[in-house]
Image (cartoon, rainbow, N blue to C red; front, side, top):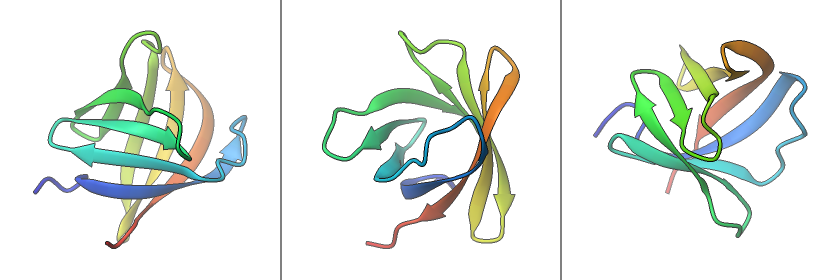
Length: 92
């Protein structure tokens, strides 16, 4: 299992992101989705510690850095940061 595989709770920590209530990232292998409640997820590809969103969200990339048992993330668009968040693994 890859280090990012699993289900992650997303929590806003700064910047221009909304509160992110009910947002989760589900990662399996080299791909995943960002989900808001029961809505269909927004797909991305996992490249190292970055999550690169697919069309129509090309240009959006979440850049991750390990932080204890979770990750700190920077939400970017075309290389410019616009928000920060934390990922905490959800135990099943």
